[in-house]
Length: 336
Image 1: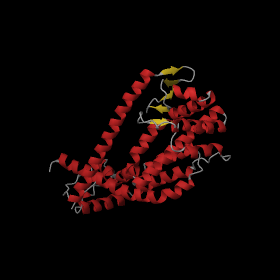
Image 2: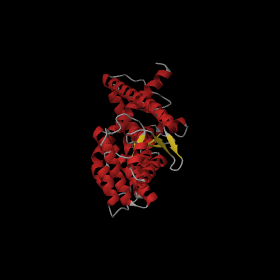
Image 3: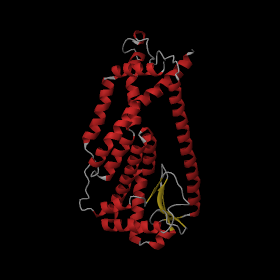
Image 4: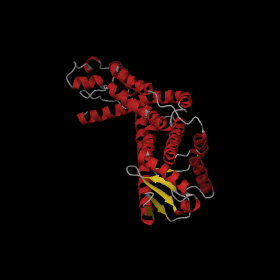
């Protein structure tokens, strides 16, 4: 087999190795997340959102870290740091840049690789299509809207209730004329402050990243985790609106008032935008209760949480050799 073909086999072995690392991590996350979810409920929304973003990527990032650790002996050999050891182990494929493997493809391995490729294409194609559709709709909204120079938002001349921040890199805030007609000036200030907080925090981009990274979680865990991330982001923006207006009760009243407007109409039926943060969602009750909670000062994320992550990476690096050999042995059983 040619050298290029061998490196193609190395890439295939690396994909399967990533899945070998991701599966136990996903199972561990499914078991650990319910108690962790309860433990982090009192953490301040902004800190909780950062933690949930990190947790959403545990299987994906952990799998990539495990794969990198498995390549440590190869990387050291490549850099002439240690003697080459591949000739000592000829009974399994090598995760080695110097000696890429020659794989005997089994039906199981081909099925796994084909399934992963098809899933990646479907997810990527769906995401790209939704992005293109959203760009077209946002361009239409920008053409038909008027910019409010005082509040710095785009006012859309429609009788439908609209209040959202849209865009990944430079989000813009949109409100419908209907909102200005139905709500008080103070309530509009709350909505604008809330959506501007979404724009400053880049919540649409954050949620998109979390949605991609969390693909290796079990479906039920992923669904709950992303819902918790969405709630944390909304509550963080509610807190920002409270800081801007100085009135928690006003923020709670604005949330309820907007929800009543949306309840009268089918929710955003004609505006399926991707990468947007709407003012109202299914978390109205939780958000209102958080605004009315006298114990509103949530705890900050303990530094020990980040220290635990750093320690895990250090352990991966320290045991890279053992992990390297074990992973190669398992790959030998798969590609037999």
